[in-house]
Structure formats: C-alpha cells, structure tokens
Length: 73
Ligand SMILES: [Zn+2]
Figure 1 (cartoon, rainbow, N blue to C red):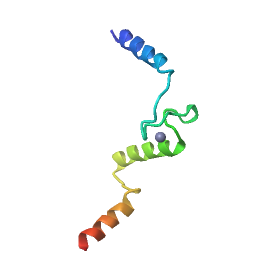
Figure 2 (cartoon, protein in one colour):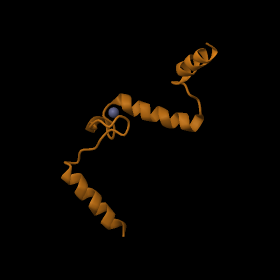
Figure 3 (cartoon, rainbow, N blue to C red):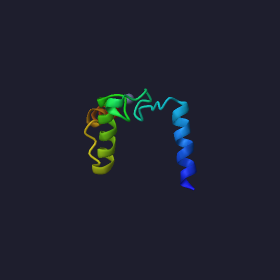
Figure 4 (spheres, rainbow, N blue to C red):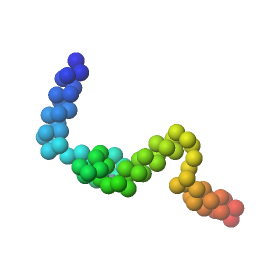
C-alpha cells in the first residue's frame, strides 16, 4: 500500500527535477543545507522547534518588550 505512495512521490520529484523548497522561506533549497536554502533558515527552523520544546522565546524577547512599551502608551 505504501509503496504506491512512495512511487508517486518519487515520480513527482523527478518531474520537478528533484527540486525541493526551503520549509522556512520557500526558496529553492541548497544541497549543502538541505532541506533548507541557507544555514540561516536551518537555524530559524531549529530555533522554532527549540522554542516549542523549552518555551524560552529568546528571539522574541525584543518583540515582547516593544509590545509592552506600546501597551503602556
Ligand atoms: Zn530559506
């Protein structure tokens, strides 16, 4: 059953020239950074998962302070 699905997916991949897109920004992925287009997108995706796991919004800290400032004014 699953073999048919795999064949279909591989056929689609061949039709599209095995081009994959970066799951972070949608740009064509680089073989060097697969499945991402750059190390930056790789780190962004990794950071997303880390945030999901540990719930420590390191990158959102500045955004949060900005929101608080806007809330006060
Ligand atoms: Zn990207």
